[in-house]
Image (cartoon, rainbow, N blue to C red; front, side, top):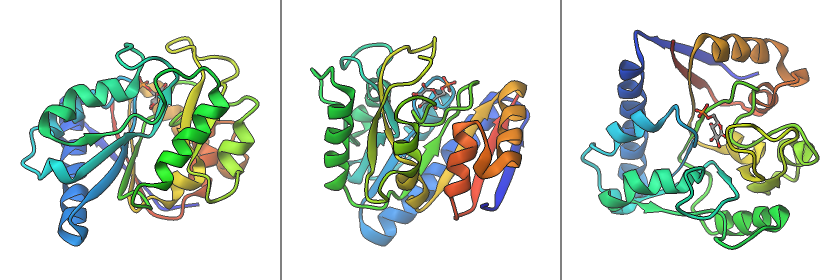
Length: 234
Ligand SMILES: O=C1O[C@H](COP(=O)(O)O)[C@@H](O)[C@H](O)[C@H]1O
């Protein structure tokens, strides 16, 4: 199990500012070292305030590629589309925000293969990956269901996988594409951002359970060797 450090904040504004500052630092380090940065950002609602703050940073955004760490299989522009939310915030800054799911695809396994092919063309490993977590313990879009084992323990070189959550999560009841656990674990830097007592308690349990956890986040963290920061506010 990796080394985990919790960072607790007074409120969600302080949380968003701290997460934005840390991501800015990672991007700057990659730009200094290589002249470009490739990062995967969590979808859902929790990190949006941090992204708004990050977008204010003075960075050479043209050299920054952003992918969603997971995507709901919906059309671009749909309120459930993770990349649409990222594009609204970062495209105006000049960042390359890449959709990982083709617009007119209904076969979720084909969508996973397509995302994997796209990621094979990116500079790898990722410079950074931000994970969120649902109240059911899923992270990225790694869910219990028929694709759980493939997402968690498929071939190490597989970067993305098509996933049918079982049961479908009520907030976005659609098939998904997700970074594999191996892709997440290979990232050069990894951070988790969550809010609320319910998620905190669940994440503590998942970490405690380790590789035998019933929660996807526990199983993913059991694969990770680099230190992980967890940023939390009530
Ligand atoms: O479905 C998803 O849920 C998780 C958590 O979202 P939140 O709205 O509770 O913050 C998110 O990390 C993931 O990217 C997303 O697709």
